[in-house]
Length: 273
Image (cartoon, rainbow, N blue to C red):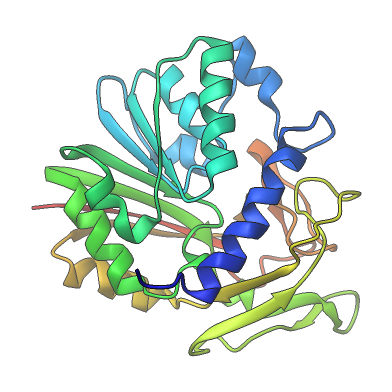
């Protein structure tokens, strides 16, 4: 049996630990609205995703399933996939508690084709996903293999142009300093005990391996996998407060103060011809 890659072992330990933190009442994850049937996605997805009722939909890197279950409430037949066993257990428990029909599968994303049956009308993957994956071409090939002919992937994430900055490196005028080059090759090893959804929580599995994927690399990978790009948008907002200087925007988003200095996120759709 092949040993597990170090990047995946460390990243999974980090995300395993985050599940309980994110399920706690003080977390920014709001399951209360989900329980009421009033949970909505961030404004970017709500504008762009389109109707999902009746679609067989796959949510990749679903964490503990909040967005997955929100998509089920919109009428989709949903499957959520994640590499974290505690996350999948929490997702199944949450679905049973609320009474939402959903299917959850534990699997590494690169092994998703073998772990899932059939093909999907829509693959949905958003916010903090590909930055944990080293092989963007392999990711795109998996996505393509999971779509039926005429099926579509919807993707949204932090823009890599914003990922070059870091609050922990002081910049000027209260702005963040440099983190990593846009065209950085290979892994970026990060030691950080903080959690993005709970500012007082501290994580013991602090080391993660992260990866920079320029927009052109993501688009080209999808094209090389046989998909056809149908939408590409850049946004001056982001689904979380990446930098301390950011201010609240509409629909649960955040933006830079003063001016839209750089794209903070991007989204795309691609169809399988």
